[in-house]
Length: 110
Image 1 (cartoon, rainbow, N blue to C red):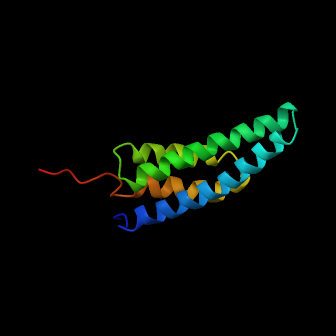
Image 2: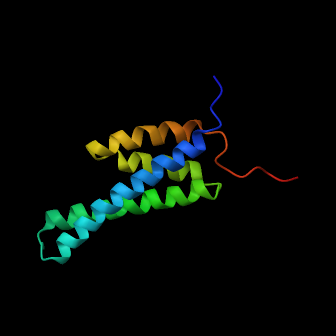
């Protein structure tokens, strides 16, 4: 079974959705900590969402520019976002698309 050529676009869309969702959650977490929630739980949750946001941004940029490390970054972002229940809805399609997409890196010029 040959992979579909549209998997790269699908992966970019899923990474963009993941970036938007984790960005909002990271923003709410940082705003909560900035508003005075100085317990360890809100700080840990905010830091976790910031890390998830960074992972998804790096993967989105890598896949968009067709970097040589794009597949690894997308798989790591898919695994990282899958630590949350809602993240599994986004993470599993990211993992499948990153593993099967045939055109994540630039074609080599002769």
